[in-house]
Image (cartoon, rainbow, N blue to C red; front, side, top):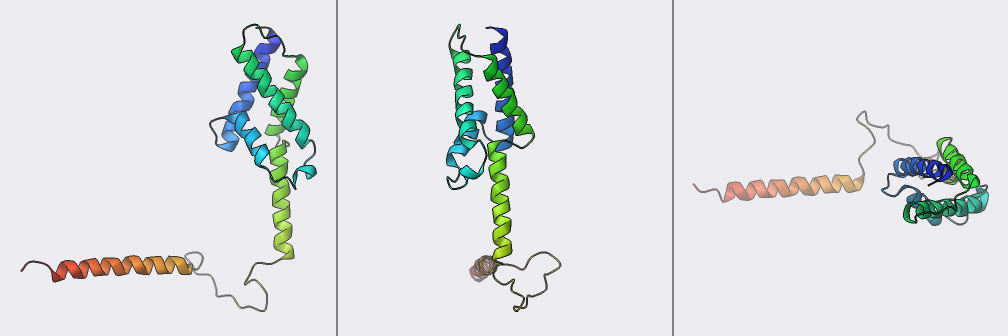
Length: 165
């Protein structure tokens, strides 16, 4: 294995570990590519270089697999190493495609919240003051707690009623 292949392989391992950590996944670069494939198509044109990055990352993964599984593979170029290193640095700076997509989605969610206030937040509607212990309980939680308490009470009553004397 030549020096460029060794350096490429080490840098790929670094990127793969970084992607595993960022995505909480077992397969780092592959999981990154899968997330790119699952991204909403309507937002992709707004992320600069999305398509080029996707194809470059697929190519870099292919080169890594060739180095790992074929003896004597000499298809890795210094340009491949440069692209890989550049992509790793962009991930670290949060300038990679998924980071940019996340930033775009957050900005759009914020704009939607400002344009369309949540139900009950209209100034004409009075809100109950929040409790000191946190947000007000939801009706589903109240019903669930009531059902659990009722079941416990019924079990206790049955136990006491049928208790041998």
